[in-house]
Length: 359
Length: 258
Image (cartoon, one colour):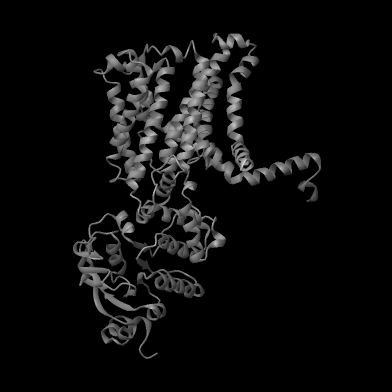
């Protein structure tokens, strides 16, 4: 009995090797960056300004985007609901956090509660049209709803709270999660948040409910005829997705010095779509990798090319879609064996062994 | 009176704009029988099936299942009552495995569908039942293959398995042998027969293969231009002159003479 338990534990570690290695690397990363930049660990722990701190910030932004991309992957990649209004979920989380912190002096815990409730309400608003429209029509309805919010948040009437088109500035973040004075703590908090959301999503996709969501994506009519009331499954996916995106918005609201109205616009929804397209639609790992690729790509290209970077970003997307049509993770899963064989051949050619010799 | 029949339609009518696809069809289906519906293309057989299964809502008339009016029932409810439906054009989950296709069908009528904090593996009974069904339809070797990778005949079997999985009392099979290789047809027909006998099930069949229909049906209903032309046993239908002149004679040769 004891033995089988240990075996299953070992097996669990082995089957999640990649995940565990990634997490260990991310735990060590701030220290590695500090080493490379010649910064001492004590100054790192004291959150002194420097290159290390800058890179921590970059990775924190990736964490936030990763949670946001995961939430979109659940909706579109797993359940097959194409939404063009996803940025609204994120935006409401961010703006609620900013406004409640700045104008009302709330603490973080009640804000989290309010944001979760707001997530459910937004999902319910989207779900009103769910039984009536499908596919691209649903996408357009969600786009419409989100655009209304996008306009309202920039309006003059709201300027007192939301800062109109300039954005919401001067939010005082809670002391224990201050993005400046406690950045390293924020970094590890973000890492834990991504990890928890990822595990929860993995379990959801593996659950009976998640399997029905996949069935709905594959053939909704068939799922209905099997006896599933597909509306409720889509609603569950929508609610979970909305709450997750709104919580990512909370992190953005605390971390970002300015909450810009751009994060509520359709461009930011497209960003989520691009992230999961690059990573691999319907693969949760893909959402994480896609978010990292997206952020690093735009950061590096802007650093190298400045203003022309947008053009090059577009080119890179075209190339990715052409050569990795299933995204990074999707293509890897399809081609794993071929890639392995290719490497063996390549190594064989250099060492004069293996298949290259025999041919 | 009503309870003698498992499925009853009363003056069922379906109009698509100017076209009357099903016109005033009243039909009674006895339990534990194979009841076939035949008729030339465009006779309204598939539309009639869609009305029975709830895929379409009739313009007029009613459908009773075990004495209960199911005319306006939402589509996902009919499966829970025990009505399973297959389609002329194969309707499966092409990108999922054979096992998952059938497991989903088992899970649909079971418990725990919204326990999203549990792994699906926790609900072992669905997978066990799915493997039983896979064995029954003879797809054991393809258990973990993707449904779309199966040959057409295999997909037809899979769809039949999806319906069986829910253990329905009434099976509505719309041309189950359509597009199948001729040598595979007897196998599937035998399967349908076995399932019907072993489970005391009622099978309604739309089929173009006359040999199949004549050999397995207890009752045959002939539809023509949306209406019921005749009803009876295989022998009665084969010797019915109206049926012969309107349908069998033209299309399939003289059956009564053979």
